[in-house]
Length: 77
Image (tube, rainbow, N blue to C red; front, side):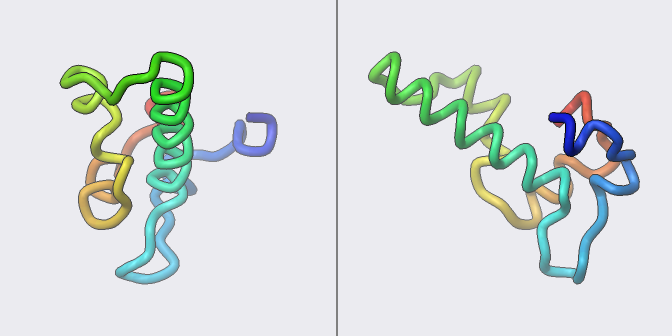
């Protein structure tokens, strides 16, 4: 967290090209994969509907993840 604590919304939205993933969407993807791994490992189950609604956008990268994180601050991610 120390490494990313100074990132601004503009930094999180940065795209190196039109088909790349933003820094924000990549960070949220990492967090979502970690969450899913913990649920599967420690609770021996898949995500429920509420959890999927919260984390689903970031489980797969691409246009949805870019659009879902654009304009968000580090607190959202």
